Amino acid sequence: MKIANLKSLKDLNKKAILNLVRYQGPLSRAEIANITELSATTVSSVVREFIEEGVLEEIGEGVSRGGRKPVLLRFNPNSFWVIGVEIEGNFIAAALMNLDLAIVKKIKKNLPDSSEFGVIREVASLVKGLTRSSANEEVLGIGIAITGLVEEGVVKRSVNLGWKNVPLRDLLEREIPDIPIYVDNIGKVGVLGEKHAGNGLKKENFIYVRVGTGISANFIFGGQLYRGSKGYAGEFGHMTLEPEGPLCHCGNRGCLEALASGWAIAERMKKIALSDKKCKIWEIVENETAITAKTVEEAARAGDEAALQIYREAGYYLGVGIANLVHLYNPELIVVGGGVSRAEELLMKPLLESLQSRLLDELKDSVRVVPTILGDDENLIGAGALVVEKVLQ
Ligand SMILES: [Zn+2]
Image 1: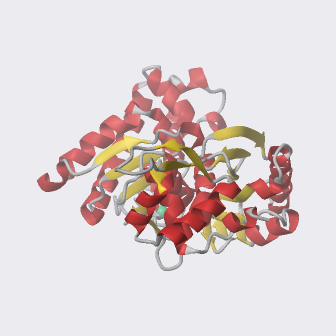
Image 2: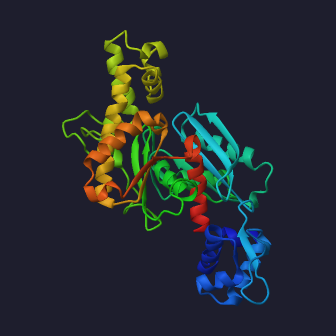
Image 3: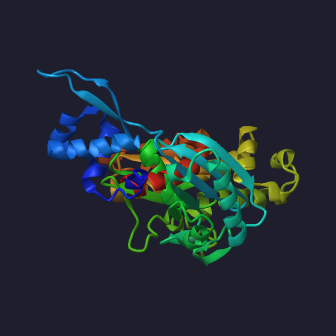
């Protein structure tokens, strides 16, 4: 079957041709041969295979440079599908996407049983729900975005889920044997989402800072994801900013995560609210367990000074941390994502002020810092991007 060719796209010439048309198309066969320096025969035979698979399509004639007008080729993003799955502490979501990572169908459910068995059962049922109308052969793969440290498909540790050493990919492959499965940390997946469908499109050097319950930074350097020696690069949340600062759940003091994460924002508000019964947050929540970064944001928007101050400080510390990243890596772009980034200007304004006040003059105009454009779908799109990255790149 022709489809198997795309699933095992090992031939580097094929990859080069496909990605060239994908990013720079429409192009003619002659233009492809020129740019890739491959022979006309190789280009013709690869293009013929891609047309049979439906990945490339002919779209009429281009401009002639003398002689017959060339036929132009373009990438067809709807020739195959990818599935992205997001596993958080209390919910699970999955989406079917085309190869441009446009979501065509999405399912989100609560996760009452977050044990590995509960999660595997839910993933299998979500995938079944999404693939009902399309043949499995048309799904290139399933990408799984999960909070925690992931090494070669094994979740080494996930604080949110209470997991240690769970061989998630192997367990899922037993349930879903006919579709390739890829598992990675939610921040790594997030930077791939930005690279393939977000602000990082066509950028060679950029950093994705994820501010959620925890904080991470993930890097695209020279167009490639940087993982570090064991895949754990990016634990930005545990960069020390205040050596005598508040205790972090990692055991150290003054980590960025203990100063600016969703968890830290909620903890600070809880402390203030419990000692001040007149605090505005009590008009929004009934008890302290409902105090989250989201409800603190609501209180800030309602004008609560304590909540505004908490966001100002979180933004301040993020700006300090990001200034360290810019001085170290000189990226062209920093994308800020994760649930806390939805607070938009409440977080971004103090963040940008604190960042600008710290950057070396030469670096001040060298970097753009922007919130993600992918919104609440960023993790699902990232999980889909993990498949696109593995199969097409
Ligand atoms: Zn820490």
